[in-house]
Image 1 (tube, helix red, strand yellow):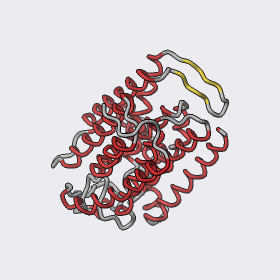
Image 2: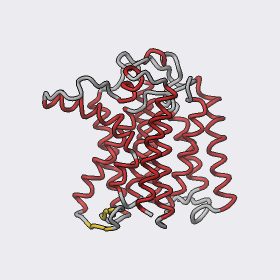
Image 3: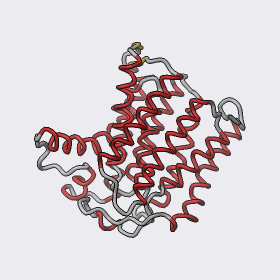
Image 4: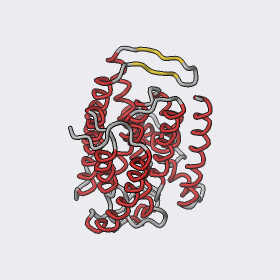
Length: 319
């Protein structure tokens, strides 16, 4: 494995990598957006038809830029190499769905997400202990690797799908993802748990910012499953690498509530015939726009503000 720089990038190297991530993402997006598949609009989403005709699958661009720059500016050991491959795999499964004339079925996508989640769990356990640090209590507990693997699979699978379900408003899922992963970045730094993966968080956040340059309301293109699935997997890895994976719940709280309630609602109705939240539209961003009358910009800002407040409280608690 070739490593261009050894150790965590410092000084000018780190600076150049971060700036290159933003500039290259913007440049590549502007040059290749027209070659992406076109969105067909979603029948059941609020204002879903307004997206029809826009380039979709821009996650292909910013994820590829991230992976290339991670190889150049980050230290690529075996563990990080495997994480990058899994991020790429999640992006590619999403992009193939974006490019397909007939959308992939829920079970097919769910099974692929399960395989990716199992891959993340296996990689993590090969290089890290099966311990969970309860950050608010400052207690570390060792559990069975099998139990840890099952919990990690649930974490990754859930993160992929709640992030995907939250992708329905220009700029929303990207903004929330940046807040979540940067919260983990700050937590890693203040707790002295910086690893080679920590710098990847900065690069990934900046690549998403390059995408958001074009996705801010009114958007010119959409990330599609290629972006949302890769982001969800990356958030989960950041949670695992923090050593306190349960922090995923508050750090990604808005993503969980926005995308997760819809998944729970469908699961209970389809498999247990239990109907909940009859008068609530899901994802919650549709409730905010259609029922509460929020604009797209208000929805993004208010959801982001809620997550920022929660994240700041979490950072204070773990200091």
